[in-house]
Image 1 (cartoon, helix red, strand yellow):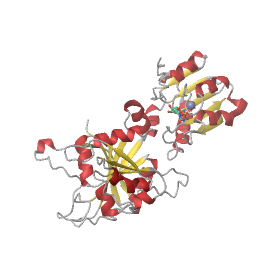
Image 2 (cartoon, rainbow, N blue to C red):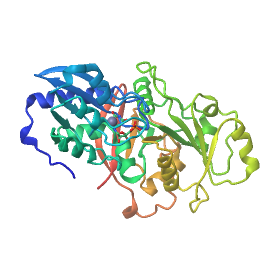
Image 3 (cartoon, helix red, strand yellow):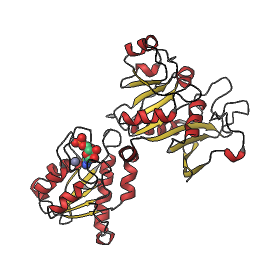
Image 4 (cartoon, rainbow, N blue to C red):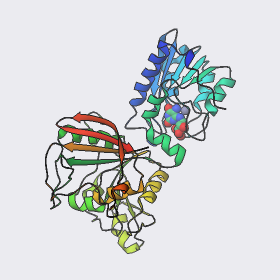
Length: 374
Ligand code: AOF
Ligand code: ZN
């Protein structure tokens, strides 16, 4: 079923055109949810005759946009696609059939579609129609476009990031709870990009009460973005209905262990969706259950922006794929608050360890990206 990877057959032009398809796919970074970001380039006689990218779920797939763009010139062309063309009827008809009808001679796919409804069947169908097919060109780069879609298709779970901002001495807030503006403008802008590409931004009731955040994505460079859903983890439904998170456009959810209908009413009246999940030993929503619930909602990438309690639980449960830590070169002192509440940690041997995957300077601050250590 799975066609082989044949690296030997790719030349410099193949790499160049696939790189272009990847750049096109990236244009859908903030808009394709819950679908993947996909780009397609059609080339005939070394000339680009059509190109396209997937913009919105329900809209045409990248291949269809490129075929429309190419018209008759698609006949005999090579299609470079960042994801295997689909073979199923979803919100739109199968692209593999459309590529065959258009008379495309060769298809190069960067990666197989992890969607079980496709999973190799698209390439197989093309191959059976006599089209020359290869897969695996710039595969790692293609995978990087869609970490959430890929993880959700394979496991039902979203790709989870948690963003933290701390002082040089590892503190997030003064003992009073005051925490605003530790990091500078460039770091905040970076976070808005992270928010914008996420399906949901998740925080805890403590942060809602302390900071009354908006949790919206505000990006000058992307005016057409879908606002990510805002999700509040609130065990006992203490969030006031007048909180700012509830009053922004877009979807808002509260995840709770509280079943009391009366307690729910003022939130549902304010248009908030309520999800009940199982409790952990402390009586709070179990973070693994929270993450599973976010996957069921078809969220691909979720971003936690939470305080020490929720981050401690996330760390202990091992459910975070990427920690984004911003370090501001200021000092808050040893009376200030730390990043993680980890009451059970008493032995050095039990300390959680992470692996650094990226370090860079963002404006006046530094950013670390960390992953679970293998
Ligand atoms: C996309 N864009 O460019 C490609 C996709 O519900 P549908 O019809 O939009 O189908 C979505 C599925 O189609 C998606 O999960 C993925 O498996 C496949 N390919 N999807 O949204 C595209 N090529
Ligand atoms: Zn398709």
